[in-house]
Image 1 (cartoon, one colour):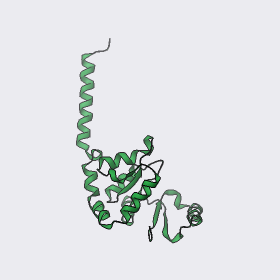
Image 2 (cartoon, rainbow, N blue to C red):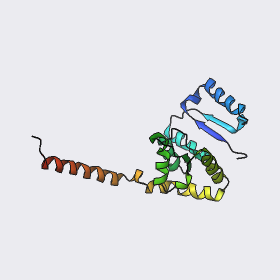
Image 3 (cartoon, one colour):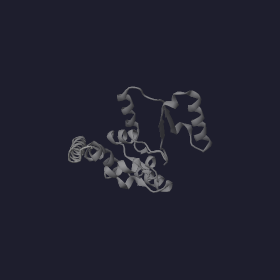
Image 4 (cartoon, helix red, strand yellow):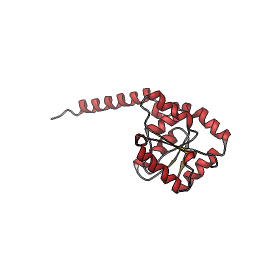
Length: 170
């Protein structure tokens, strides 16, 4: 997308040599270094979460998807685009987005991943609606249904207790 920027944040970006190696790699692929922001780890939780204010669309990494970072992005109002892979670690993003009613942000392959991100970036109205509804979507998902989860665990414990009582050890 013309005018787009990429932000990569990781502890490794705190090392100058590593940062330069990554920047050089982007430049070698024809991407202007001025469009890349490499952020080191932000230790304070509020500062870490405020970094999402700089992001319009989060790109879920693959083949190993984010989990905590995907939830953080959604919580901070940032839609996440993901690719659904074939293993657990490459399907976490799809699972989280499905439970938030965002299956249209799940791509089947790399080409779909790019197309989905470009489509959202090119539709400011859709992006705005997504950003405004993201936290509510996450709050409505089973992932944040703490009471429901606690009730399910309690019911499982009750069932195990009843089964144990009905079939005492010999």
